[in-house]
Amino acid sequence: MQPVRGTHDLLPPEFRKHSRILNVARGEIERAGFEEMATPLMEFRSVFDRTLGDTSDIVTKEMYEIHDRMGEGNIVLRPEGTAGAARAVMSNGLTQSLPLKYFYQGSMFRYERPQKGRLRQFHQMGVELMGVKDPRGDLEVILLAWNIFNALGLESRVQLEINTLGDVESRNAYRSRLLEYLSDFQNELSQDSQIRLQKNPLRILDSKDPQDKEITKNAPKFSEHLNNLSKEFFGRVLEGLEAFQVPFTRNENLVRGLDYYCHTAFEFTTTELGSQGTVLAGGRYDGLFPMMGGPLIPSVGWAGGLDRIAMMLEDILMPRPYVMIAGSDPLMASALKLADLLRHEGFIVDMSYQTQIGKALKYANKISALGALILGEDESQSGVITFKNLDSGDQSTVPQGELVTYLKEMKR
Image 1 (cartoon, one colour):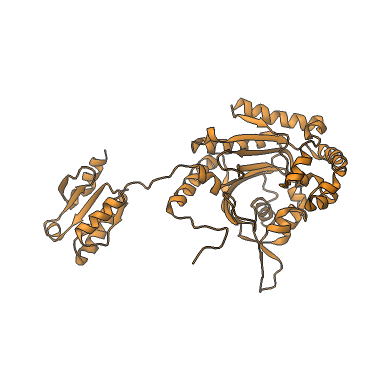
Image 2 (image 1 turned 90 degrees about the horizontal axis):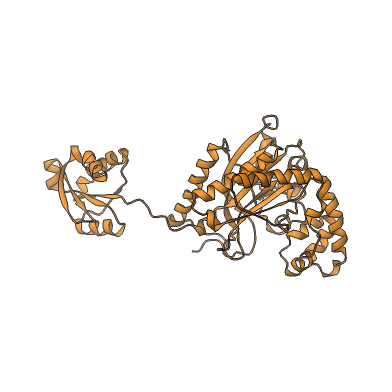
């Protein structure tokens, strides 16, 4: 029995890393006034067809479709989080409750060739700041990401790359210039990019095809087609990053092919994960809600890959527990009661179900327990418990009523 190709089990060592990332993220994000929410794993395909477009790889190649026997329409497993969050705002009548500050986390699904850091079921966390058009909104969400990497001790191992896509006017001017440039290479582009050339040439800049990359290397730069408004917007974001001493690199090749993106685009990258070097990416997407049939709601956000960030963390060890050992089956209930008492006092107590003391102590040593709490027949009759310090080998007899105080004193 094997897991489905492109999926993997999150066993305790890796799950502890995911938990660590999410606990740190929740702390930073809640202090910034963001609230956690969740959308269904399933959405109608139209949510993504409208937003990601019929020329994106996600829509044309990567979405998992579900055959719905209830006849409710084309349903897919969500490939990303932003469109679902925007759909939730519209479905729940929240467009008049702006601004909205959301945090989410969960599984996403894309049908693609599995490789290191790229899975068919992957785990993301993300933030969305909806209803804020000020560039300080862009700055805030970038700072949130930076603070999370700092709190995880990864700030020296990631690099913030940032660019601007300008406003609609700037984008349209650039689109015309880019189309003019790419038309000279029409027959040399990949088959997918030849289709995109007619429908959305900006998406060619997202192409992973080596020949496309070579062609776009000398393409016109977005920065050459920015109007004053766009330059001012981006300048304020960069000034804010400098004021908060967040190091960044201007990357003019960093673009978003989707039409609803504008102004700021950014990524946190690393050199430690090979070709899958982007660990968190985001930007401003003012055009998303109108594309979904809703009102204009200026928004900005990001999504981070938990699987990739976890690959950068050192192993996280479980806190060392105590092991409760009962010397016989009839004493198991009394031992469990004592273990439960200690757990309520904040101690980590692993219950051994092996009544042979020697084997139980081997288990305690195997899991690097701090000590063994042994309740045998003699201890039970005398109202005491034997405590064996597994670091020093010392052994003590402690009245059961004083056990909590004894362990607290030892901890100090």
